[in-house]
Length: 120
Image (cartoon, rainbow, N blue to C red; front, side, top):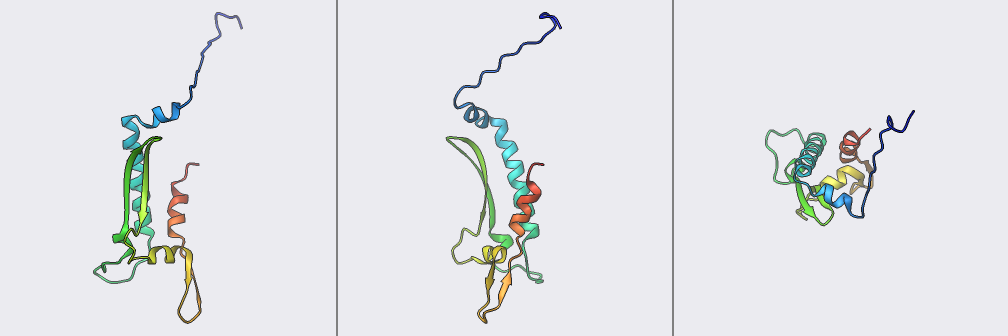
């Protein structure tokens, strides 16, 4: 190939380019979309009792998501049971030992939601 047919591009990355890219307004909508999808998957996979009405401490009612801007750009976060009186979602995730001493295996529903959301 001759020099006239070659395309020459120069890419210059300066320190902090990620912060500038992640702070763009369009990134917020993208992060909010994926955070909302993760929240939906976590809620649908969460274990629940077979009652028609949900109790105040149901896992479904205690999973929330938010999107915020910090010094590194937009980020999404899914919070499980912010209320300290409701802590059974993590016990259902990891497993626990019953009062009788029997080990109850965790359901790993949060890990499953994260694994389905990963980029392949």
